[in-house]
Image: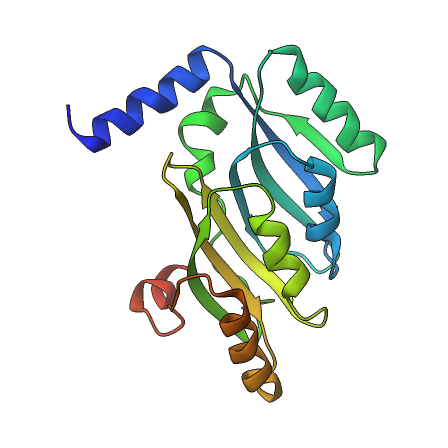
Length: 195
């Protein structure tokens, strides 16, 4: 058994024991809506989050949430809808679980001034909200990918639209976070598949 096989077994166990609920959620494509959505998710453990800017007024996000009981998925879905977020419960959708979760994204003509960064967030409650709260309200998240791998830290890929005039402010933001990060904006893989 190697680590790749162990991750596969763990993921299958989550599906088999129905300890992960998956959703496709539509939120407004406006600054602050991602943060508002994350506040609604609350203290629940997020197992996955995928998003890529693709439309001027709406955003489709793919989110996984840890659950203790199967009926929690329906309760979470109702809460999202109650707060104005159109939601599709994908918990029992095999296509979503096996393939689509890894394919969300692609190129976007709307990703102007996008900077792409890999981050390591501590795997603890509040790490994402600290990031979102520290971020300048004029900057927009245009890409976000996270998948819980069971480590002490989460590996996050974030596209942030930062005007060239805000270069210093962005550098200060990164320093204030003190989350390890790597600038991937010039990575050829990003250029080929996401830019």
